[in-house]
Length: 458
Image (tube, rainbow, N blue to C red; front, side, top):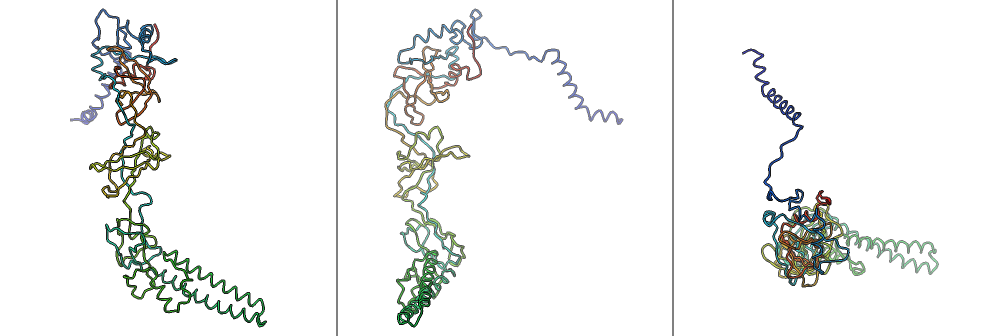
């Protein structure tokens, strides 16, 4: 086989594609690029005049024949008339077309409804219910005095840390107190000698200033211990000899059953509030940094619910409203709304709502999912329709009241209350029949201009 033949063989697919495209361009040029319209079976008899735009008999097309629409509007009951309100209708070609479009009609019922909002939520600890307890300086864990799951009362020591900074602060206090004693003695002698004329007023003033400076040093040492979590008042220690003062400071804050081993570096970690020990993050002998949690204590007697609410529902929610929460496992709890957020989450576009629920029996656990039902108002008796019966034109809700087998009045209504899929509206009464499904098609037929379509008078 020659090189030319082999080359043509390699390029054959490309040549074939160009040939097909060339034929397509030739056909398009001679046909004006028009495709044949599909043939559809006419939904009417050959003798009828048919409205091709709205697919109903031309003589009965309410959108094209304005006099037909006006005649139908004149038959509207008085309770469905408001001064200045435009009356619009939706028309379907036939009962069979309604069935194919999924338009279902049900009679209106009147019932008692309690307005509620149902939102998926998750349990969480209240912001002030969790205490993460640690040492205020670097150190080594000497002992953890609680077990996981134990219930502790406020003020209980949960751990002991050996912190060198604590020992230095205690020594600084002892030294400052000794300096105060010395400065006080010097000041007493200076006052006596100054009164006898032996010392000058300037010397007395200098001695008094040293006494005040010694008092400031005591204050600084007290504050240093307070900053480390140890409360001490030097005035209660005044008068103790060196041995007694050292013993008192060495065991400062320690429970009687905790041995200090002769170390003055030990600092107790107190539970600031009561609750359950939910975490132990360090063990004896482990080095910890300042403010690193060692033990976590949480009060679960009440929990918060995190409820992300869509913006269109959050306007009905307010603090103080009753909340019922049911987990996916069937556990129940009741409470109230406490916080309604003022900003939507940037990722979910939902507004955070927080509610508190009682949990004295500890049946609920943090991180459980469930459904919260918020009662947003008082019970009312009104006409009830399902949510599928309502379409919105902007903020205005509409229902579609059946006037004949294929004609529906688009009736603007006001939503009085909601309870899940059940919606209470005004202007409807028992005896009315409304579309409960397929209403999107009726809305399009009622407001064709919203869909980029329309017709003109003939």
